[in-house]
Length: 115
Image 1 (cartoon, one colour):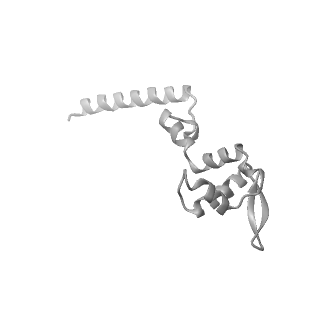
Image 2 (cartoon, one colour):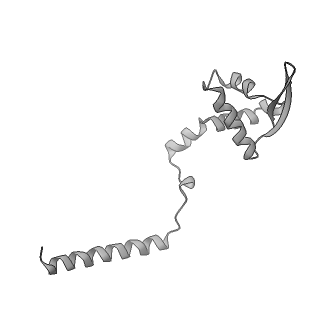
């Protein structure tokens, strides 16, 4: 490729990049967490945290519930390990969507979650 063609190609690339940057500057970009697709909305309703929030709205957490009790409740519709449920409950607590309490189970105090 000779120098003239290369210089013209570089000018075209520079022009395209400048136009793109100008357009990006005009638009307010959304964070990835704000971007949603129709498939993403369906999937988000079936996640473990959303199921736990649904249980909360149905009144399951009106009385303190341990991770094992929550696991028993979710097992028929959402089979998963009890550790995942315990971590999801902890994260909902940290996000202030549940509160911690203690519950006496077979003579020992256990962490329970309530709303």
